[in-house]
Image (cartoon, rainbow, N blue to C red; front, side, top):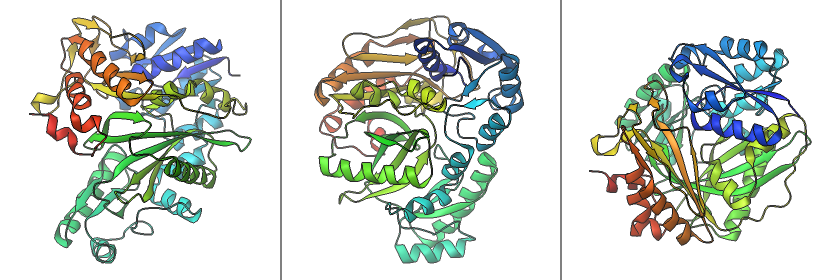
Amino acid sequence: MFRRILIANRGEIAVRIIRACRELGVTSIAVYSQADRDSLHTSLADESICIGPPPATKSYLHIPSIIAAAEVCDAHAVHPGYGFLSESAKFAEICRECNIGFIGPSPEAISLSGDKAACRATVKGAGVPVVPGSEGLIRNADEAVAIAQQIGFPVLVKASAGGGGKGMRIAHNDVALKNAVSMAASEAEAAFGDSGVYLEKFVENSRHIEFQIMADAQGKVMSLGERECTIQRRHQKIIEETPSAVMTPELRAAMSEAAIKATRAMNYCNAGTAEFLLAPDGQFYFIEFNARIQVEHPVTEEVTGFDLVKEQIRIASGAPLSLPTIEPVGAAIEARIYSEDPDNNFAPSVGVVKRCHLPGGPGVRIDTHLFEGYDVPRYYDPLQAKIIAWGQDREEAISRLANALDEFTVEGIKTTAGLCARIVRSDRFRRGDLSSDMVNEFVG
């Protein structure tokens, strides 16, 4: 077991990892930018070290600063959390070269998952169904049009190195497609330094279902069940739940098998997530693999009773999976709380938190770094908290989550808590009739 772990992240995920380290008896080392000097993760960690000025490119994304901090603090391993450097094959490779453990998959697996076109081809070769589309990167707009005419419109242009909805465009005809290819490539180049794009059939009215995977270095791979992440805004998830309201035992078994096949085909080790689209006719398609712990991992933890972050650390240290056969119990739903104003086109909201009351009660969990007096910085992702509710069934989980969202009180900044409460209380959500654009029904 690693004895000293540096956490190359900030916010609620850094706090989450610190707590896992405490339970394992491991020393936690926080890194922080000058903007995060007074943040919760900095004070909770056993040790902390400043890594640079506020911009992420000069701190949390600056590999030399992270490596230097790990070496100065004599860290045995680095946990990257999610975002920032968590899916940087270069960072994982440098950690390996410096004999610093990386709590995540190998650089080779990260590189493969990050190249979505190559990942798609790899899992397809293993017999996992993928969305019809190009066999690799498209060379130009004319090639894209030819493929689209073959598979049928609408189609989705996607950045091969993309994520978070960047470098992604939907097209319904030839003219729109040519424009979409150009725009997606330009956006991908600006965001990821890679203009490569590929084409997929746009599966209309699909649901976004992902499967949590854990795999060890001894070759054992387990699926811990699904999470439904259909409710999104601009391809950013807002509400996640398990089990999915449309899942059947037969479909779950088939999708779990596909997720495990994809994991093995990638020679993957540690925590990961296989993401699928589920079409209205019941056919499912692999779309990508996330080589890290997910923001929404708590819903899986709540129904399985298993700590995924502690298991990540164990696996990275060389230990085999400690999981027994998993039998999920009940239902869990997570609402992401962003510091944005839903009534003002989701404008960012920053400033000092003047009052902060976090909800509680049976089945309610809060993952956050908020506290009264915290100055929300403008430099980073607006995710400030996750409210998770567990219930014996979906109805109880919905009721608990709605009440917790009402109780959640933060003054000084605007948040999406009220929006999430309106969504989960709606008749449409309660009957499980979800779509990726349903958020539009609940904003002015």
